[in-house]
Structures are given as structure tokens and as C-alpha cells.
Figure 1 (cartoon, helix red, strand yellow):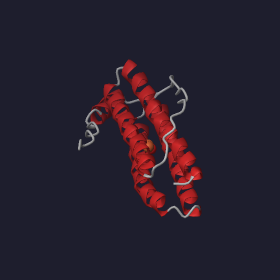
Figure 2 (cartoon, protein in one colour):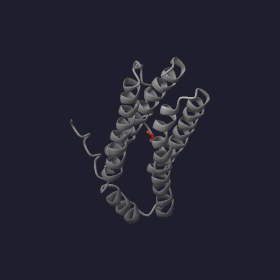
Figure 3 (spheres, helix red, strand yellow):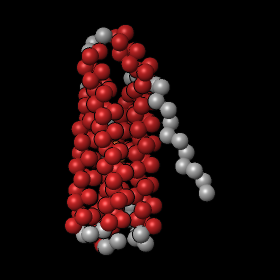
Length: 169
Ligand code: FEO
């Protein structure tokens, strides 16, 4: 892979690392408020982001490139409501979708077809990432201040299962 692609992929690896840190911070905040189902959803999202990090990590190495790990920005730690948290998560996923689109544009401009093909998984994944968070935001808006409904939604989000472990060779 050429230097431009390597630099952009390393920058994106950092962005996915930040995503994981951001979701874990949201999880910690929700956990403190005893919203354990929402905290569970965010904790698993943080794990899922680490699987995205490792896809970039492996791809850079597979292409004989060099992974450069850089400082991760500190995430926000305080919010006003669970709705605000999930709305920020949705805004974040939309931002990440934009970053992935930019990477595809770059890979196409550099005629790096291996990178273009690799990125297709992320293009598809971002559709799901945005849709999943949007669904929760919409449900939260429906629930509003209804404590019982919020309790039930928290229970629903507690059902999200952990990301399966990477198969060992
Ligand atoms: Fe790795 Fe949620 O995008």
C-alpha cells in the first residue's frame, strides 16, 4: 500500500479506537446511573469498535504496511440524559460513515483495489451501525419521561449479546 493510504488507514484506526473509548465512556456514565441495560449495549458497542480497529490493524500488516498507534483523544464523560447519549452516538456513527466514504474516495483515486474491496465491509457495516442507533433514539423519543417504558427499554437493551471472540488459528 502506498504511504498516502497507509497514513489514512492509520488515522482511521485511531478514529475507531476513539469510537471504542467514546462508547465505553457512555457505558460508564449509564452504569453509574444504574441504567444497566443501556450500559450493556454501549459496552458491547465499545467491544465491537475494537473489532473494527483490529480489521484495519490486520489489513495494514497484510499489505506489508506499518501500524502506527497514536494518542487517543479523551472522550466526553458527562451527559444530560440517556437520549442525549444515544443522539450523540448516532451523530458519531454518521461522522464515521463520512470518514469511511472519504477512505473509499482516496482508495479509488489511488487505484488501490485491494483497499477499495476491504472498505466495502465497512460501507455495509455503517448502514447497520446507523440504523441500530437510530432505532434506539426513536424508541427513546417514544418513551419520553415514562419511567415504566424506560425501564422496559433498558431491559431490552440488556439483551444485546457480547461480540463473539475472534477465532484462534
Ligand atoms: Fe466502527 Fe461504529 O463504526
